[in-house]
Image (cartoon, rainbow, N blue to C red; front, side):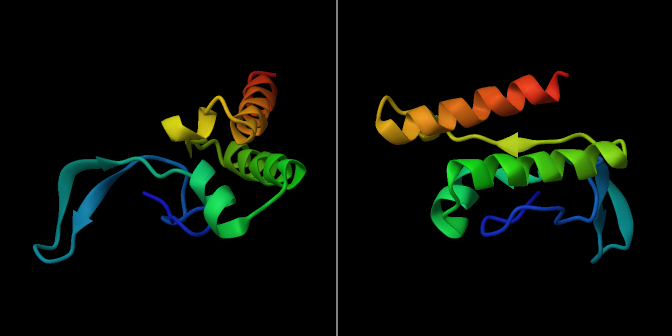
Length: 102
């Protein structure tokens, strides 16, 4: 669960939660896993530079860690193309991966 046009905390949390069925006024067995960022959001909506993307992801990761949540980012297969834009995303991915394991 997340926004396509802006990154952040759509459900107000970085923790999985059971979906609540408003129509039937009951908790369901459907587990929702919110994500905080998506590659396409940076490319198509925000049009950020490499450094801006890395800094934004760092900020989201810091906020997620502060509240002991699970940071999730959606990467599309097409992001890692053999073209020049794919090189930028590969560098971003490796930077974030390295920093997240520290």
